[in-house]
Picture 1: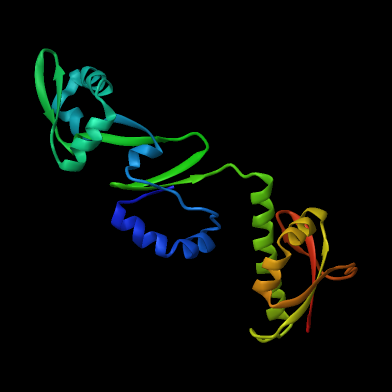
Picture 2 (picture 1 turned 120 degrees about the vertical axis):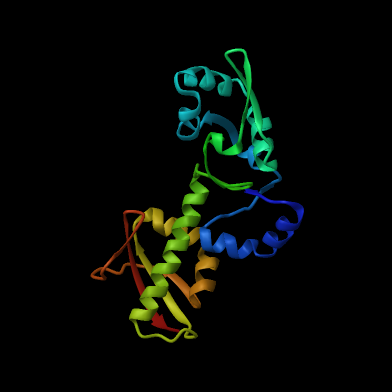
Length: 211
C-alpha cells in the first residue's frame, strides 16, 4: 500500500511492474493519506518540553495524550502550533514539541517519512510462498547458466530435482520459469550426485544443457 497524490499515483503506476519485480510484490494499492495505514499516536518531546515545563511535565503528557492525533498531524504538516491547557493556563506547542508515530494496521509493516508512507502486508498464503520459491528457482537457474559458461541468449534444456515443495512451485510456475531462463523444456527427473542449492531451507538440484 502506497500513499500517493493523484499525480504521484499516475507516475508510480507507470513503473508498477518494475516495483513489483524489484521488491517481490504482487500488487500495489494506493491510499491518499498516510494516516490510512495505521493508528496515529502523539507523544510529547521531552527533550524540548522538559526544560520548559519542568515539574509540570506529567500534566503536559496528560494534555498531549488527550489531543486528537489526526488534528495534530494536520497541524504539524501545515506548520501550525498546537494548543494545550496545563494548570489552568493555555500553552502553544510547536511541531518540534510533539512526536507523531504510527501503530501499523494489524498484519502490516509501515515505513513513514513526512507525508509519504508505504505499508507492506506481511501475511503469506501458500500461493505467495509458491510464487516466491519460483522466483528463487529462477535466480538459482540463472546462476547455474553462468556457471555452465552459457551465453545470455543461449536456450537450455532444464532439469529440476529435489524437495517436493520446490518442485511443486516449479510445476505451478513452469511457464514463468521457462520464460525467464530461456528453457525450451523443463523436466523433473533424478539428478543424483548433483550438488544441491538451498532455497527456503530446502534442497534443489539443477541441470542445464544447451537446447
